[in-house]
Amino acid sequence: MRGKLALALALVAAVVAVPTADAAPKTPKVLVIGLDGARYDKLLAADTPNVHALAQRGYSSRSVLYGTGMAPTVSGPGWSTILTGVWPDRHKVKDNSFAGNALSGFPSWLARANTAKPTLDTYAAVDWKPISDHILRTGQDRKFVLDGDALGYEGSDEKVAADAEKHLAQNAADASFVYFGKTDIAGHNHGADSAQYQASLRADDAHVGRLLRAVESRPDYADEDWLILLTTDHGHTPTGGHGGDSPEERMTFVIAAGGGVPLGTPTAQPKIVDVAATALRHLGVTAALDGHALGAAPADPFESVTLKPRQDETGVPASVLGWTHDAPAGWTVRTTAPQGVAEWQGWSFTTDDFWTRIAPGQHREANVRARGVFAVADPDEWDDKGAPSTLGRFDSTLSSPGYDVAGASSVTVKFGSHYRHENPQRASVTVAFDGGAERTVLSYGSGTADVIAGTVSLNVAVPSGAQRMLVSWRLYDAGNNWYWAVDAPSVTR
Image (cartoon, rainbow, N blue to C red):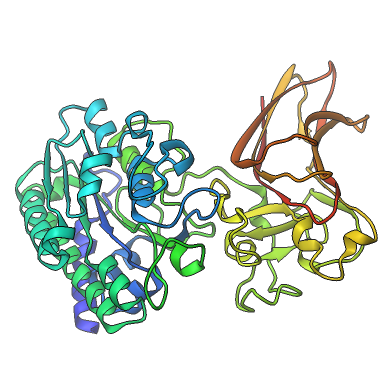
């Protein structure tokens, strides 16, 4: 293993070598490799030297999918999300039938690159045929397609690897996507804990190595800047299967090297929508996507908090750090409510991995536009210890530091909002200038529809002469109702 890993590290270092400061610009090239149903933890625990090499040379992180309230954890939504760079609420692929999809309005990153720069050589090789039929209908100069369901994935994956190997070695190969399907079948038939699943991951790694060697063999590769991305569409349960909301089924990942991506494991996990954004950035193509190129996600003040292990939420593993009421510097939380579940006694700062475990299947998994740490007011879970809602109402306010608004006639308050409503629960966003009275700029109340994975943008008029503006998010008059998650708040002129 050690010898194979050292060899693989040397190979990947050559393929994704970073140019020196005074070197001439190199030609950008992108290769995205998809391993259907490959669980990140199992992939890194296996004898997979080529995958390890990519991870150690570049960027590597677990990620999480949507779930109930957005789409099931199956391949149709997964690969549509990866290849288009937008979430299922936009591309409308909700299952493997692709019924009612809106993919014509959200082309793949290959199609976007092909449209923006027609001289680019675009290529795809897949053996799950629906990817070709629905997601990659257009936008590839060359496409190699097999029907793995009919022909069997072991032989089909081998043929995909051979065709991609030849293409990468001999053609311009500016933008390429290569898909392997066997591991998903191994997961279904034997489970993610099985020897067969491990063997399939090793076969995937061998295919990855062949593609990397093909890139390294190119006559002009020294003058090329290669970005290699590796990802998956969903995970698998230990005994096999996916489609549900468990952490194992929602487990995805992004591994990348080259192309200016940051090194190491990020503090805030990426999203699979970032794959398309990263590929397009490297090719110099702009697009309005849900994803952000790796390393380019907006700054978020909530990332600075220190998270703690569970207290009352015994269903969360003790090893998962994921909540605190201690606000970031300059932020405050004010709460009036009888004592309930400690983690949700007023606004809390939490993560997807922690929050979605407390009550799966209640649309918490659909909070896909939040990243890393976000703020949550969750009276539904607060009420689960001692029924405090029989004693009084939940009322909690999260307030920002003062934002500089001097000289501005208006500003934009923007934040991610994931809100589920049930009467009599109410919520509001207010602003106050220079210590003055609060002004309501957004309210949720009777008749409010759920806001699932939304982005709120509020234009706020600034009074003449105002210097500082405080923004507050309040969830109140709530009992055993629902919740509100807020992320990445910002104020811009």
